[in-house]
Amino acid sequence: MAYKGYVARVDFDSEDGVFVGRVTGINDVVGFHGESVVELKAAFEEAVDDYLATCAKLGREPQHPYSGRFNVRLSPDLHARAAAAAARRGVSLNRFVEEAIAGEVESRGKGTRGF
Image 1 (spheres, rainbow, N blue to C red):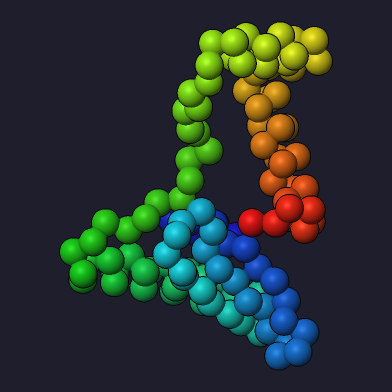
Image 2 (image 1 turned 30 degrees about the vertical axis):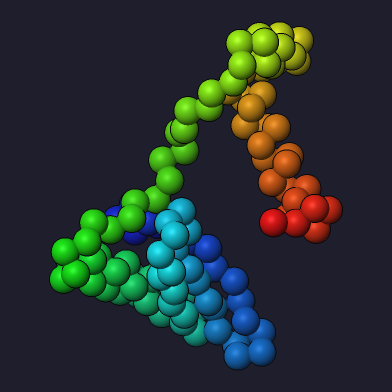
C-alpha cells in the first residue's frame, strides 16, 4: 500500500485475526492494523496523517521514505573490476550492484550471518 509517498508492509496475525502493517523506509515507527482490507487501508492513511500532524505539532521534519538512490564510494580499482564484471554479465554497473546488495541482504535475512 502507498499513501502520500509512504509505503507499508502488511502481515497477517493469525492469532488475533487481523492485518498488521508498518510504514517502511523510515526509522520512525508508524504502525496500524485492521480486520479487513478496507479497514486496513483506512488505518494506514490515518496513521500516515497522524504521523505528519504529530511531526508538525512537534516542529520536526517528518522522515521521508528512501528514494532508492545513494552514492557509493569505491577505490578506483574496485570500481574498474566491478564495471568489468558487470560488462561480462551484460548488465549495467547499477544493476550489478543492485543484484549484489539484494543477494547479500537476502542471505543475511535467512539467518546465515544475521543482522
